[in-house]
Every structure is written in C-alpha cells, then in structure tokens.
Image (tube, rainbow, N blue to C red):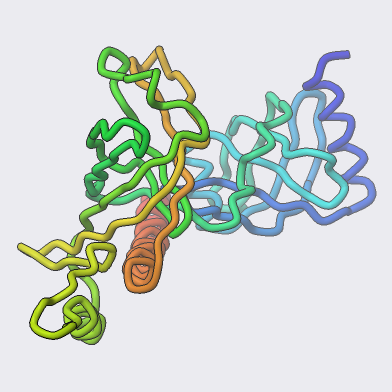
Length: 267
C-alpha cells in the first residue's frame, strides 16, 4: 500500500469519528488556518469545507495542509477542484509534510518590498548584502545566487552581525526616545550607541546579532536559501515587532481583497 493510500485510509477514519481537523496554508509567511470537516471520502480524494479566506488560499496556492490532534504528522495535499457556492474543496495526492511547516515560535512575514540586510561574519569580517525573503523578531531568511555563494562562511553555527533598513513607519514617540538615549554625556564627550535604531532618508536601520541555522540549496532556481536566528534588543526589537505587526495586517487585508475578487467572478 502506498503512502497516499495509507493517508487516505487515515482520513477515512477521521471522517467516521468526526474528529476536529484544520486546514493550514502559509500565505506570505502568515499561517492561515481554520477548522474544517471532511464531508466525504472517495477512492482517491476527500471533500472538505472551508471559508472564504481559506478557499482563496486554496485557489491561488493549489495546495493545503491538514492537521489535527488525531494526526501524528502534518499531511500535505493538492487541490483538485473548488466549489465556491458550497465553499468546499476536493483534495487528493496526500503525503507526509515536512515537520517544520507551521511550527515557528514567531511568525515570519514576507515583505511587500523586501528590505536589504547587511551581514558581517564575526570570524572573518566578510560582508555581504541581500534582500530579506522573510523576517520576524527572532529570525529571517535570505536567498543568495549560487555562483556568488560563499559556502565556507555560510555554515550553521557561524555568528554574524546584521543591519536591516526598514521603511520608516515607526511612531514619533519612539524616535524621541531613541534620540534622547543615543547621546549620553560623560563630561563633554558623547557616547553613541550604535545598536539603537537610526533614522535617515525615510528609512530606519536596526542592528543586531545572530547566527546561521540552515543552508539549503535550491539549484533548480540557481540559489541557496539561508535561515538565520536573530537577536535584537530594546528599541531595535520594538521597531521590528511593529514592522511585523503592520505587515501582518497588510497581508490579512490583501487576503480579504483576493477572496472578494475571487467570489466576485462567480456572479
């Protein structure tokens, strides 16, 4: 019996017991997950219910994940068809998903206009810059072209310092706090704290430290994907938390717009 057949049998048992399950999609870094129920189980497929936002994710991504207390793992499935009127979907081609899907302690958001990250390796002083693919207050991911990838430096565990420039959407109150704190006087000599946010030309730049935690080749795309654990303190952390919060709101609003556009087509 194949993995797909084993999983379909498991889903049949879940449907009979009416156990709770959820659909999970990762939309621009944001987990979109709602309760669902299995309406029917066929020879090769299942039919599940959804809501407008989840159905929109299924339409645009053509896949979803199934999770539940009765599942020992996450199940990945392909979307075969959608019924917008009944708000349900037919799923098939089941497989066990990677264990890290949806497991991050903090949500990483995908930027609309990716900010530039300036990375310096502590051991060598080597510097490199790249746009951020996603970011949270505790981690981030970048992509580097295969032909420019310095494999010797990008090893898990290697320590880095990082500076990231974000659009300046930070409150004026936070700016005043930063300006007041950055210059402290001992006699007549100011002490500049370079780990605090700096505002210039409509950008706010924060600095922190971190380490490389994962390196995965994506050679079919001629690039490497690099995951980083990041540490930000005080106002720098406040800046990135505010950015992530604002970006979450934008992503949710974007998803509602996509959902409305999708359902307007059937009228």
